[in-house]
Amino acid sequence: MRALVAVKRVIDYAVKVRVKPDKSGVELNNIKMSMNPFCEIAVEEGVRLKEAGTLSELVAVSCGPDKSQESLRQALAMGADRAILLKTDYRTDMELQPLAVAKLLKKMVEKEDPMVVLLGKQAIDDDSNQTGQLLAGMLGWPQATFASKLAFNSGLTGVDVTREVDAGLQTISLKLPCVVTCDLRLNQPRYATLPNLMKAKKKPLEVVDAASLGVDMSPRLEYLSVEEPPKREGGRKVDSVDELLDKLRNEAKVLA
Image (cartoon, rainbow, N blue to C red; front, side, top):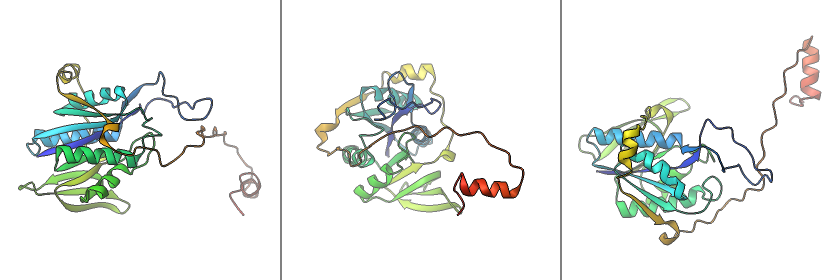
């Protein structure tokens, strides 16, 4: 059984994001980039399923510029068998939006014929949380989002997915093929060691021009301005409840 895992290259989660002077977006030059943490969890789950014998092949797919190969090589170092880069010059944090990504992934699903598509629940740059749902809708496949546990049945015809909801944990059963988006508690991703990174260079990585797939990738949303949040002011002490209410009402204007 083959699985497809989607990978996105984003600004590293530990980096302080800087806004461009013209407020057209965030600065990407000379910034540390890495694999989206939720995508990393999806890759780890795919590798574990492969190690358990559930999967026969794990294929990593990414959409973006040439430098996205770095994240794909990391996925290969973690244990993916091969990788595909859908190359495009669109900015992946603003211009290449979830609808376009879902359309591109649909093309790869039609080509690779996987039984499971694994994705991170969202990317930490745009926080859209839409690609998995859009892909499942386009394919007409069942989906499970925010997965914290996967359990395939013995016949590999379905999977029980435990997912996090507001009231606690919910377990649902899906028939294969299906789409699953992964949450933080699903696993702890392994560290890609240097020897495995070297071995990953010998694994196949196919580069496909995204424009050749006949997909309309034009942005549906326009970013008018990107600004840093206002700096948090220091707290102040008050001498009485009446003074507190007065400041909340007249200065903070949070009370009518």
